[in-house]
Image (cartoon, rainbow, N blue to C red; front, top):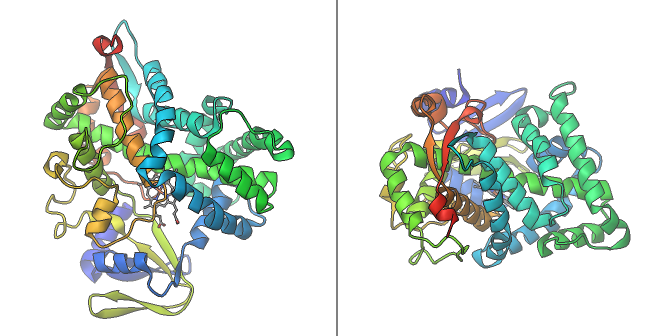
Length: 439
Ligand code: HEM
């Protein structure tokens, strides 16, 4: 039985807060909006995600010695810098401006001027976003196209990699080693001589300086940069894939969004309007609704002391060492909160609402949003949709279009942010819109 289905059944039988024991670990699962909000606010500062991030540092980039210190540097030095550069529209817009030309170049490589082309959507999304982001973050000398297959493999094998079990996912273990070696070589000359790599963004230079000041080794610094790159991509690939899939399989939505995008000039990469003056309210509302619908439920914390979580007026006892898993997806799909129904995707009904990241929902639920890259993610999702539909008429290909409506493709069934195998097999037809290119 699928985990989603199982958790639904358990919830139905035992209510929105229950305890399970997995491999000897006691996990308290919470699927209640007040309790999730309480966990996020963490008024007594007792819930830690250090173990999750340390596991990611070890699993995704194989840095096993010194991982607690590396984690501390990441949290205390790197995360504030990510927040400074990417959580506000003002600062992330400059990066988006430098990403846009590469975004268009990459999208153009999928088209064919003589006839339509059939393209794997997951490949289109990941390659376009990855190469454009690498160019903007690390400059033109970064080996973006060469490293992409390794990142895709790491992403696909992530659930196995983070178990840290020996003899599993050996292809992905090799991929992460290659990726780390390339990153070490990329920062190499700078690390030794302070000679800055050409075209590197100020944000990445800030990262490099702060990691050097913290006395990380070159390998550790390369691992953290690789982890940052991975973190900047995985959720965005996943969300952008579902955003485009949902737009093109909803006929009314597609037509109206296409019309909205056709009203924009092609040449300029516009600065974000305020929520009242957004140039693309339909695209924004599709993004917002997609963030609710396709959300992954991966907020995990560990209690550092005996404590309690408030559930209405009741207090749930949590013991030191307990894991708490916030089932955000269950909350986002709760019919009592969102009348849209469980798996309905109705972006057009959301026009006029604020379009601030998943926090639109987080805020409505009384949660704060801890994502430090939220503005960048929003801008990137909007830009890839705008550029894709400016360049092409996009259709799900026949046969697969019906599949797109079938449960295994309609359900975003990942809990880690990586796409399922069936989603990776989703193809679209692209027909070049010559008139747009000639502008
Ligand atoms: C659509 C894309 C994205 C989604 C849905 C998303 C979602 C999230 C969520 C739910 C968290 C909280 C995890 C937790 O509390 O355990 C988070 C944290 C974080 N995100 Fe994102 N994210 C996205 C894109 C990005 C991007 C593009 C970046 C940076 C380039 C980024 C950087 C971060 C960082 C650094 C944190 C950790 C913050 C902290 O613990 O202080 N994210 N993200």
